[in-house]
Length: 412
Image 1: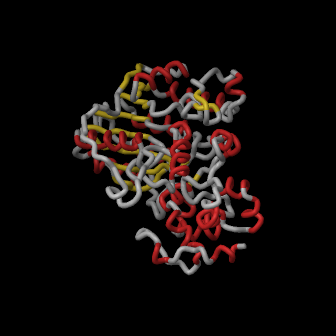
Image 2: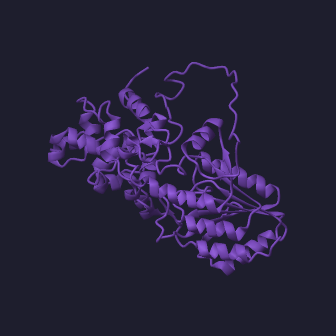
Image 3: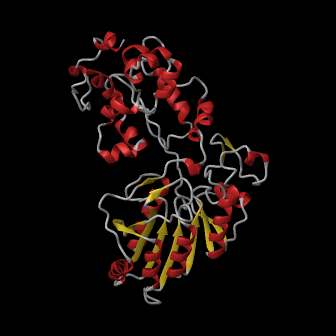
């Protein structure tokens, strides 16, 4: 059956400029222009680490493993909905491009995004944890870290130890942008800004018996990896009062070891410690407070039926106990980006804290901007639209995908 479609493959000359081919395999030439390389590499870091071509990987392995070539085509659904394609052993994305789209076959489960989420949902602890430490990263012990910090502190008036879930200098998102702005302001004020993030990315706290290494970014530059113990020892050995200003700022707990963070904070001996409410991970592992990743739950009591039927409910008591231990050992000032976020956090939990305040990320001001009509000629033959933000259900991404899929071949 695959041979019957071979003659329908597009000739390389008709492929977009961004196409990386032509490939020896004509079927790869068909799918390659439509494989979203950035999407594929971000969704599958193993492919990125191996330096593989996304189109070739999808053609050879990806579709067999149920991976998706882009954000609008569901490989598993297409095969389950089209047993003729599945039984013939045909690459489903290739089939859709050369035949399926003309036959009216769907690329995603119709009007049932929620069912798909529930079908694939799993507890956070069962979700993949992966090493995000750059290759050949320098391993830094307590002596080396102390030497680096002392050199940076020679002309500084303060030291900030900041903590989040990833290297903010390499990842883009709301939290990362705020941390970068925070670093810029502190460094401009002659503070040393030392940022720690876990070397293993998780959607949970680190298992108590497996504290990860820490990635170190100093004044916006990645310098290597260390351990919680080495970081605490280096900070403890900085002479008292040098510098006078010391701050501990916790932006995210994801992937971190609670006892390790307590040790680091105690060694720093900050004048103030701040906890940012960027999400609600401190009151539930489901940091968006969505029951089964679908319906807002407002963080009910752990013994409630709402928690008992939720994928995050079983581990919530243990998670909250570890978070409470952190808050009992570190006296935090709470900072939230909005009054709404702060109100949700205060109502959702009873974690001890010194005080709470709102510090807005930004303010949106309406401007009057003249608009011009958009036509096919204006945009070179096709309208280009983008989804701004994370590709998540609660942000409406499923609606965006459905609109794109239904209008891919529309002509204005």
